[in-house]
Amino acid sequence: MSPVTSISQLHALARQGTPRTIAVACPHDDDVLRSLDRAATAGVVRPLLVGRRAVIESLCARLGLDSFRPEIIECADDAAAVEVAVRKVRGGEAQMLMKGLVSTGTFLKGVLNKEFGLRDRPLLSHVAVFEAADPERLVLFTDVAMNIAPDLVQKVQILENAVGLARRLGVEWPKVAAIAAVETVNPDMPATLDAAALAKMADRGQIKGCVVDGPLALDNALSVEAARHKGIVSPVAGVADVLVLPDIEAGNVMYKTLGLVRRWPLAAVVVGASAPVVLTSRADSDETKFNSIALAAAIS
Image 1 (cartoon, rainbow, N blue to C red):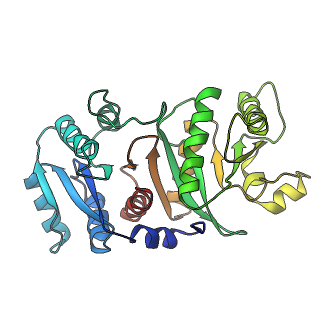
Image 2 (cartoon, rainbow, N blue to C red; image 1 turned 180 degrees about the horizontal axis):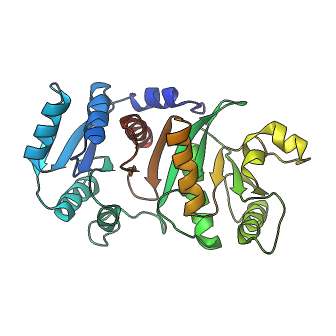
Image 3 (cartoon, rainbow, N blue to C red; image 1 turned 135 degrees about the vertical axis):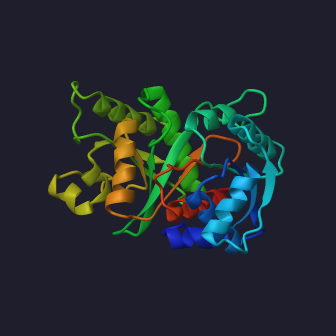
C-alpha cells in the first residue's frame, strides 16, 4: 500500500469496500449530525445513533437533513447511551465508535470499562493528523487530548500507538520526532531528556518499526531548511511523519492553532482500543469531524 499523503486520499481510502457501521453516543449536536450525514452520503459509514430520538429528529429537521435516515436506539441517559454504543462495537455490530454531545469523562469511562469496554493496549492515546508539504505527507501528532503529563514509559506507548496508525496509512518505516522547545539536551528541561531517551531506545531496538530522533524543536522536525540552517543532520529532521509532543498543553495548543487559526484540514482518532474511536472537540467543525470519521473508517 502506498502512503496516504493527503486528506483527500484519506477520504478515498475510507470509501473503499463496504460502509462500516459507526456507533455514536449522544449525537445531539449540529456538527456531529452534519458530519455523519456527509459520511453516510459518501458511502463511508452506516450511522447507528444512540440517544434521544426526539432531539435527533428535531435537529435533523432543523438542519435540513431530509435524506439522512440513520438507525436510532432510544436512550435518554448519557452514561447508558455510551454503554450501549460501546457494547455495539464490542459485540461486532459496529466497527467504530464516536463521541457526540457527552462529556469526555463519561465517554472514556465507557470505553475503558473492564466489563464491556474496548481497551486493547495498556494505554489509549489521541492522534491528530494534518497535511504537510515538501515532501507532501500526512503528519501525525500526539497526544493532544487524553494523556496529561506522560512519563517516559507512557511516551513510549504513545509513540508506538502513533507508529501503528502511520503504518496502517501506508508509511512502512515512520520517521518520529520527539518534540521539545530546543534541539539540545538540557537537564532543566525534562522534555529534552525524555526525547533523547526515546531516540536512544529506538537506536537500541527497544522501540521497533520506526526511526526516532530528538529532541527536535517543531521547526526542525517539519522544515528541511530550518534543520539545515541549524546544522542538524538527521533522517527525521524536516521530514517527520510523527510528532510526539511533550504534554497535553503543547498538543492541545498545536491542534487548536492549526484548526482555528490556520483553518488547516485536520482529522483525529483515539488508538489503542480494539476499534477506532472518534473523539473530537465540541469546537471542531463538521469538516474536521467528517475527516475524523474517514480516518476511523480507513483504519477500521
